[in-house]
Image (cartoon, rainbow over all chains, first blue to last red; front, side, top):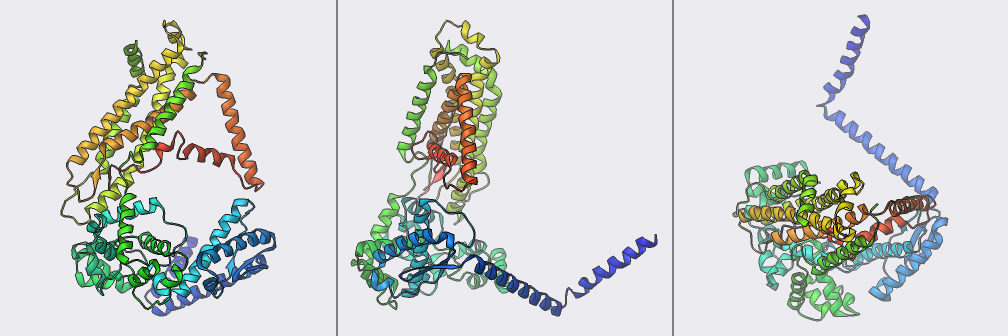
Length: 342
Length: 217
């Protein structure tokens, strides 16, 4: 009995302290400071652990890879390949002066021993370097592409997704764009739109759901605005929370990346140089300069490619169905050939 | 003769066929359940999302139907040691063909149920611009996927015990070699190759990949 009473007293004492302190801002601040200190300690521990594993550096041109001795040969081969590819892609005048951040590789302890790993690793180094080059040479365009700079070519499947986005997202320019209206496609891609991005892209009736679709990273005030927008349809609150950065674009970034890819392909060898020559110009002028054709021509090509890649139902492509039938016939023929019952 | 085979096979597999038909009716109706007011600006978005989410159900159903139909095609003969088949005045080849076609007939029935349900489900929609419904396309893809899987499983079920044992042994060796290669960090995995080959664009199961969209652009 006495033990139970003692336990109750201890429990009350333990519970009472945090209950009393819950509302106290000072306690919250103290906890925040402790959390910060723990985070810093974890970062220091990670850094120390990485230092013990990363003890070698491979340098090829401007590409520096921090790695460990067992990976040296692999990293050297991949870095050589990546550097050659970067020189071909951007030209020595662009690549050589670029400051590429040191790429860490090999600290995770993942066993990589296959020849295919060289190609994959080279692709990774090239991608990291290309992002750095784009960011240094052209911050506005990199921001417009939200960091998703041209690299691997945009595939037909990606363009199919772009078509689906155009048909599915209720943005003002989308339907006309998918039907082939090039200026509407420009608006859908975020080219030449005014200050009121939200108003130009979406009608007010769509704003509450747009607010619902915003991901995380909202402040308390933003959360209140979002709730107000979603529940009461308060358009002012919608405007405050649906900033251009958070807004679902009418077309995904792949669409924008494909437009830049078209411009670079059309412009040939010096296209990148012309594109990034004057970053203060509007994006449409720079794309036209890079491609050597008016931006409208590029947009016509863009929408034609999207229309071609448009998904055409579950039986598309037809050859898939034919292949399946041929296989069925072949397997059935084999199954019927035997003579034994069991 | 075919009617007799069809009847005996129906007796063995009717529960499975009916269950699959019910599922085939349910999937399109469930994927488009609820109200889709044409005034809603987000209708195209919601329709595409819902169709994509439910799209995975079609290949799963096709595989399940193929599995059950192939098992039902062989189960009575395996159970009775092929006595019934041996009493019939027809060749093994013809008998197997009849059994196979009987299974395909049931698969066709399930497909018809799927198409009918898809037509009903999509008929009450007023589609936004640029979206199309594909009840027949979905049905055809379902039938072809089911046919591919059914043919493979039918052939595997009919293997002689020795061949079946060899195949099983090969499978086990494949798994063991893959495990060993993984443990030794050799960087190649034969099991992954086989899976890749089975699902590659020109493989017998390639039809299971891709878009299973009842409503699409």
